[in-house]
Each structure stands twice: as structure tokens, then as C-alpha cells.
Amino acid sequence: MTAFSIEELVIPASLDAPGAEDFIEMTRMRNRIEAESAGSSDLAMRPSELLPAWHDQAFEAKRMFVARVEGTMAGRAIIELPLGTPIAWITVEVLAEHRLAGIGSALYARIEQLAVAADTPVLQGYVIQGESGYIDRIIAPTGFGSVPRDSPATRFALARGFRLEQVARMSRLELPADRRALRRRYLQASAAAGAGYHVAYWAGATPDEHLGQVATLRARLATDAPQAGLEPDTSPWSPERVRAEDRILEDSPRTRLTALVEHVETGEAAGYTELDVPRERSRPVRQGDTIVLQQHRGRRLGMVLKAGNLLRLGEAKPGHPAVLTFTAEENRHMLAVNEALGFLPWGSESAWKKTLR
View 1 (spheres, helix red, strand yellow):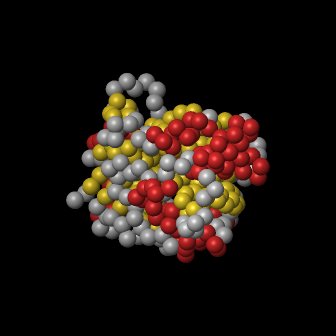
View 2: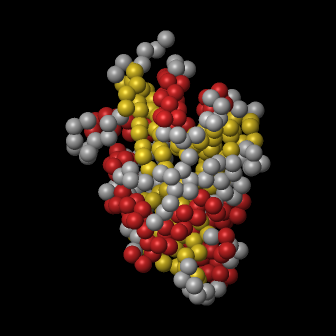
View 3: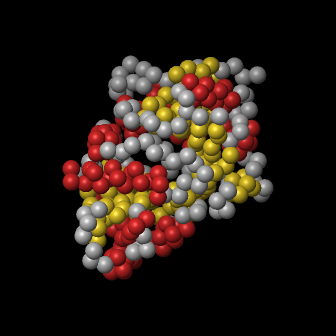
């Protein structure tokens, strides 16, 4: 039996502060686990990119625990508690060479105890799963997407009473994109939308005039985006919360490119999309939130937003190898937009849920 210990990770004030070496080691371990799951290092993050989000917990309390084997980190568990909701978002990850030794079970037990103590009866989490070698599959209740029944992640979730709720497709767009084709799709979609919509672009922090609009859009993600059987995260959004999130971004070496489409007559924001761009050009860009509000759908605004922001990426931050995105398999409209833009599947992410009472 492998001997291991579990301890709470103390979040350092900075990467130069005492104890920062533990956070840096945790990040290296996290990246190894992500690479094992995805078959690629494209999802790797830098400690400087992860740390700022742990400093601001005004709207979401977070704690992290790490397991050590012979002094070296072998796994981690995270619990995130959005204020005002019954949800605990959880992560449990163990390096492949240390699985089946009770580490994942011990980490999960610690997290479940905290969820019970916080009176959050709904546990939810996302898992990236490798696809090779597994034939028998569990189909998501939505009818779209599936996971391998016998993969370690699936067995672990099922053994602890979790239910598969949703599968998201991981897609990749190789860069540089064909700018002529992008421009053509953007102009065609803009013509279909008509003159009643205007697109605003910015890099970094949200301009003051759009703070309220972005707060509304982020709140509507819980109701307008496909949630399958997941408990929606209805924690309140305000301009102050948007600004707090902007401060996290400003403390990170990453840059966010945002495109927001506005209904001219009413001044209402109809939708937005984000691209999260690392400093190093050798690393891929991540697609962030994308939403078009229900009352504005059917006007090709999704294509306007995504094609427009990809054109903006090529102008403002050229040279990255790819854009990565995650889209619910039942969101067939957005998948069709992605496919038209040239995104290709490269993996899947499953969403799991357990109700404690």
C-alpha cells in the first residue's frame, strides 16, 4: 500500500513569497495530469496565470488540497463554492502512476466533507477523458456525446455516486486562419443580422460603458446556455463583480479579447465572446464564454461575434498556433458555427453531478 499524506495548499501572496514553491510544484503536477488526460500539453498553464484567481475570493470561496508520496505531489483536489448557490464545483486529479492507491478516494472524501459542512448539497465537476482503447460507452442523457464506460475517470465518478449529465466537444482551430474566408463569413453574417446591431471590441478590462451589459450576459449564461441536468450557477453578477474579475485578469500575463454585439435600438447587449490569449506566441489561445441571448438568436450573431473576434486576434495578437474551445454536444448551432470556421474535434470533456441529500 502506497503511503501518502494530504495537506491544504497555502496560497502564496506572490510567486516570490515564502511557500510559493508549493504552488509552482502544484502547477507542474496539474499540467502533467492535463497532458495525460488530453494527450497534449495544450491545456498547460503557468503559475502566474493561475495564482491571481486564488487571491480574489469575494464571490467564490476556494480551497485546494494536495497529496504527497515520499514528499512529492501526486494529486490534488479543489472545491469552489459560488456564493448564494447550493453548488460545490469540485476537481479531483491524480497522476497516472499513483492511481489505484487510495489517493483519489482520500482527496474526494476531504472535499465531500467540506461540501457537507458548507451546506452545499450539489457536487458538480468536469473531467477531460482520453478516448483511445475504449469501445463500451455511456451516452449522455442529452442524447449527444458519450464517455468510455471503463476509463479510470468514469469508474471513479460512478463508484462515488456521480451521474453523467453532459459531454462537451473539445475543438481546435489551427492558426493562422484564412483571413479572406473569415472576412467573407463575417460580412455575410453581418448582412444577415442587419443594421440593427453594432459590435464593440476591446482588449483587457471591460470599458465602464459595458460593465452592466457584461454582468447581464454572464448572469444569463446560467439560463441561456445548455446546462443539461446540471444545477445552474445562479450566483449574482454585478458591475462590481465584473470589475473584480477584470482585476484578476490584469494581474495575469494573459490578455482577454472581447467582442460584444449590441442591439442599437434598445442599447441591450445581445451577446458576447472572449478569447484568452497567453503572452507566449508558441502557446494556443483559449476560447472563453460565448453567448447570444435567446431573444436575439436566429440572426447569425454567433458567427458575427466569433468570426469578428478571430479577425481581431489575427490583428492584435498574431502568431499563436491554434484556438481551443469547449462546446456542449447538444449545442448543435454553436458547433455548426465552429465547424464552419474550421474548428476540428480533438477530445471531450464530461460533466458529472451528485446530490448529497
